[in-house]
Length: 187
Image (cartoon, rainbow, N blue to C red; front, side):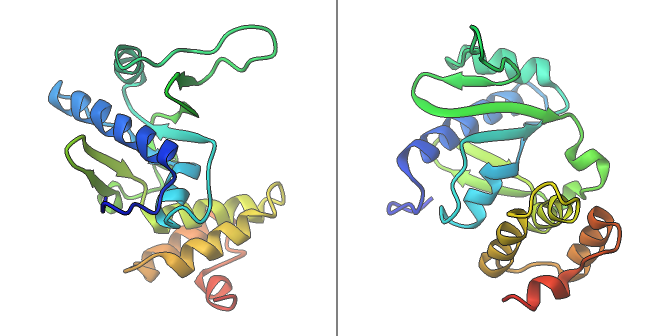
């Protein structure tokens, strides 16, 4: 990331810690997690859309969570506290493993992008085409009407998109209801 980062300090600190953990997983011979969800949206929108958590896809949740503990993460506890995720005392962003297979196997892993965070390492991030398709799927389900705005923002801000791949993924996620044209119309 450049010296004048577009990201809020708390988000960048969490991202850098994730890069360190990812490097440790890679050094131990395990595939590092992939950042999905709101964290990926924040990266691709250059901080225009903020998140409160880091959702991760990781085939070895046990290894990832053991490393997270070594890096100071704790699992919240107590009445009224969700215990599925992890927090770090240094920032107020939650971390949660949401899947062991990237988008239930629908995403092409070769499309995953790597964000270098020297000297801390790198973070694997779901492809913008896949996060756009995921947002369109949530919108199409009727459960999250605001996701159309996120998908359009991502589409407008992302560079070098594979429109053929994204068309296929949006059709898969929306049951054929929507496609790239629905994003282009709003752009």
